[in-house]
Image (cartoon, rainbow, N blue to C red; front, side):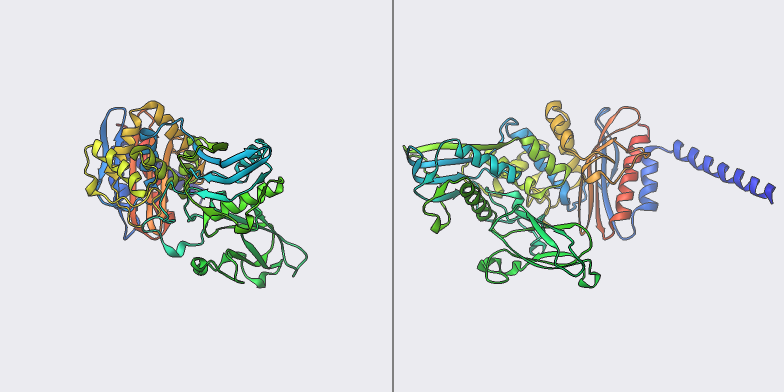
Length: 488
């Protein structure tokens, strides 16, 4: 029996060594072909292109002209276009202007807030902006609180966005005035068994109403949920007749939370600003009218810039790519359109036209693709691996801009949307800098990898019709392992 086990063990290791020697002797193309033939998930399709940036040649190509829905790899085109076509040192700005006469501590006129589409404007930003208003010495506003959201059109969602994704946090109502990404996070801490959980919100605001229907440590209450009657948004009513009526329900076994969007991001911003001003004793006398919207007068002799809040481009870029933030991508697209067109009031078309301009510069035909938004949330986008690799090659030629892109990309096994992929011990660990993209049936990955010979490679993998994410991600990670380990 011992001899039998010994020879079985020897045979096992011989087989392993033969397989390894066969694999190591295979070329990159052979290994990739085998992977597609034997491990591409059944019923799915894929387009792949890998280009060696060091030796300047295609190292692998499979249906590279296949038109695919890119999901969030669309964000690469938005990010690269922004880095090349807008000034990197120009931050996102939110400005507060006084229109009228200032006497002592009173503004006899209106307080205007001009939105610059800052997607990272949060509670800290609001506190900072209010502190700067307070620093002017103004304690009373004998006029209105006015929001200027004229930077973009009034369409608060992108073309082709799914209506039934509302009220998910990743689909905010877009506006040049954004506060906490147009969302609220509800935190629940269990109390005594059977009692309602303790509920807090981030941020705290009177803009929404919380209906606590939770039960502590009561599994029969069902799963924890945060929801609102979003179908009634357009009437401005939900639940008990108030806007943004949020119902928190289900079992709270331990501390948990849920994030949900709120209707009308610009109203949310102005309501929060009004509340923060009041906390500091700054009164808006016409508060009975709440707030309104208008365009900041450009020819008034009584304009006073009172406060500005700025967010660096890199901060927005980092969250756009590492965390795949849809709001940040749409903000970058709007910024892109504003800088390239020179227009004061823009729509999504100006930003998309700027991206099409780069496509032309790359020698490709924009009419061969479909661009619908900046984030990839739209099901109308259609790109190809060839196009994505062309953009990655374009970015690689400018090392300064490339450094900003690389800082923002997820790193395999380390952070962002690649944190739980390409684990330590695999060839791709820390070697892949790439953007993921996924929604129902779509799984894409595009970016850069450095192989064992020190060559930089850019690649795009676009899996389509894949209803199960696990095997598809494993397939993509194996492609990256091959790109790292196979010779040129």
